[in-house]
Image (cartoon, rainbow, N blue to C red; front, top):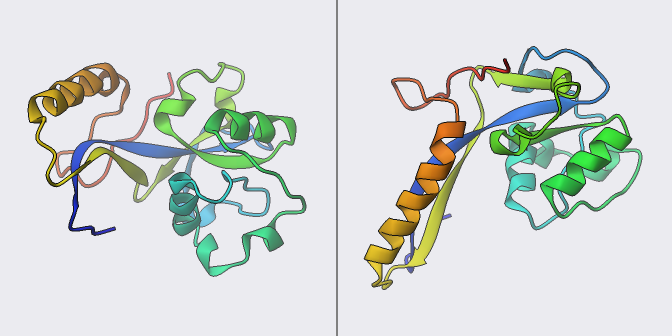
Length: 165
């Protein structure tokens, strides 16, 4: 989205993982091979829902037609609980998978060729003047988050595979 009155300061890129409770795989999967028949998403209005729909080409279909039930999940935590209870599947940002139990990690799949990711940033008005505060906030966020993220490839365009060990 391009807005003349806002400026985005990029923080980091976060890859998505495929979480499928109906399989015990812990392998890699290509985005085109993701089974959308039991794919659960956050409710409308969440940017992650739009990202996942575009990744899986769901924006070309009627998503409610793909699912056999209706639900509303307003947070990643609610979505994850719903997926676990119903043996369904979803896509999750990498950082939201850090607390998944070892028993549930067998349901995580790395998405490859290319690795889909979302860019996280801070958005401010173009006339924002407190740049020292903004720089400190950026520095603080990055110092806490970067140690947990997988490293980017040298090109910076594709993220490296994620180690589940």
